[in-house]
Length: 408
Image 1 (cartoon, one colour):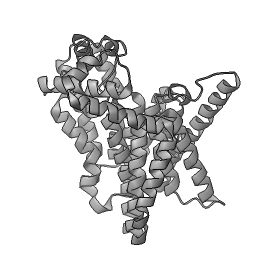
Image 2 (cartoon, rainbow, N blue to C red; image 1 turned 45 degrees about the vertical axis):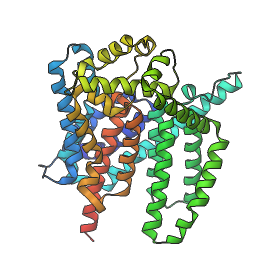
Image 3 (cartoon, one colour; image 1 turned 60 degrees about the vertical axis):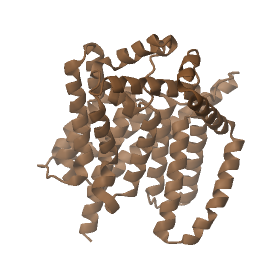
Image 4 (cartoon, helix red, strand yellow; image 1 turned 120 degrees about the vertical axis):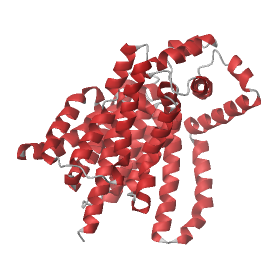
């Protein structure tokens, strides 16, 4: 057991690292983490802080029940396999949360930070080598990010920033190093050009600013808001990747609002991201309206592709586009009730902890929630593992923080 106790914290570090650098290799380390956690198992006691973890397990069970009315069992069981983290990580937490320590929490967070640093080095390294060899698209969003889709990588990068800033490292020039780290992250996200990440980053920075002012009670800093807004607008206008995306989004939304039916008919051969989302959201909503209990875990793609083709969007079917919204994706698969459960899993910590909620968990919830509005974030292994792993780490930190306060 002593050996397992030493192994477990390091498995958390490795999961965080491998998740960013090479998530395809992560399965054995998840299994090792679960096995080594046995050394910390203790009969669980009901606590409302555990609700999100329990809800996540119920979410997995709901997908499992969705197999009972699926026709495409091959895809369905693959989907169930990819979502096993929704069961394994919460179960590991329920059996071990009473014995978690700060060291375990820090190891998991440090693993993600180190993974992000490695990813940044590789991404910039590849881009510069590409440029040196005469490449022309070396810093384009589909080329720059290493190992996974830009949105998933951007979310991990943003979360790592908060992990870095919350830590009180006793090293020389710690603040300068943190600022440099943030700048590298911002530049990387800019090259990856994920609109949902831009929105999430802006929302979180605004929220943190207000939280810091309220916490410090230095109300005079509220007077800086107009100046910060002006600076922000100028900065956005100077960055074409962001300003151009915002302009295209506004134009597309206005075009859709004029005549939704005509918009859907006219955009058959369009592949611009904002148009894709509006069209796919429209079709997804129609499917959910026709199937309030869902079409079945295994039949999501088949149903979407069928609707695409029946409306002339063969290109969408060929590209195998998902709903580009996790709530809609879940609703298509297993119904409106599951959409509500997902919402409760995400906002659960806010409801069950109130003012005792640790800020970093609020940041994580906000980041994932915003991303789920624009992407089917929990349909790929990277998003599934990131969400379930970081969620249980931060829930465990809630207990660690509570125990630390009670011991004072």
